[in-house]
Image 1: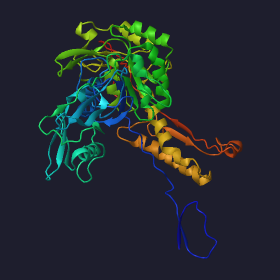
Image 2: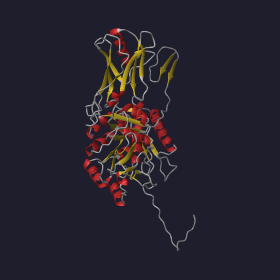
Image 3: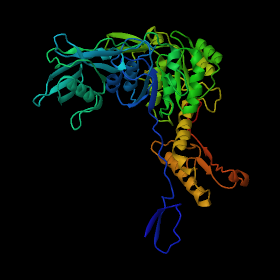
Image 4: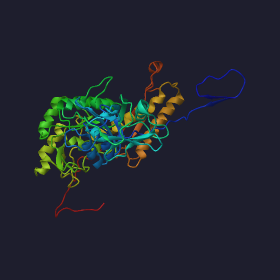
Length: 513
């Protein structure tokens, strides 16, 4: 008896063969849409490496350090994101190349004390300076225990480190770098290297790491943008992370907008940017026009900055409106619009704090200029919200934020899910399986609660069409190894204007329907 997988060759010898076929239909699960990718500065954590899927402000501060009163601060942005319901955050930390990792030395007790081991922080930044290390007697006789402590966090410990003289110090280095099997893992914060000490360790004097610096003061908007290639920095480190909303924290340089839009198109990321603080709607619109950006992948906010109550540092700070708009979008389902949805974690904007209300002319100017802004009141009440819900595209068919989100959601879900088709034999059954997979995905979107696709004027009509047959796969195309699926989908419309035609008067006669 032989058990084979579908596609394997059968033996010519007599006998029983069982061929296992995979299920005919492959079901497609939609990609997560709440991933928010950001680039900024921090006091801890890896540089130019994305840390994916942080779920709340506490996790972000554990990785990147506390909320700090400065521009481009990652932990500040994370607090805004969490305050608006974002539960999946990805960050890339950048620096100005002056960042330094903190370090400390463990000494022996020789007559002239010598360094037994060097401990160097895995990450640069001033958080490294908050670590201390101490050596004490281990639980087992003749052994030692190393404790590595960061204020406010559970210490890392390595107990029962054996050996004497140089052997002990090598065992300590090995414990920090490799862990102790069955006891403790390798350090998550420091790397150890051997020193020259040969005497017993000092067990009475703890040591504190020093020398760590953030390298944040020289970071510019260009630093946030970064470079692409084999070594990716800044924004480009977000490539293939799966985030669907992007924000270069407090980036206000218009010459970066085109690169953000281009990268957003290639990766399916809706990037949010803003003009410098104080820039009016007309000034922002002029800058957007001059930048050459005309894309559904970029959302441009006027320079009406939002005020954030920094309870950690005891100050009120002004932050880019892009940080708030990006947070709201990431927390909103892709078929929905950010328009007229409450934004939280802000105590005002520059305009609202000065009691200056946007005029109707300014609102129309924003729509014409392809920019947006955050203001209070909103059509739905006295709350802060984005006021146009538009991206920077000049095409009315694609300038709604729901177009950006739904297009990216569908396109990148298909891209992720349908790769199994490559290498298959193109048969009528195979085409049917492809159609079934796509049809099942769209049917789920149509029948879901809330509904994600549909035609409100034809609510019972199927709002999508998938064609994979000879009508769009010619003999010549098939012979070249191509298989083409033509997919059309009707998105739900967003209400931007509610119009009530009213008639009243003594002469009006009403006949109830």
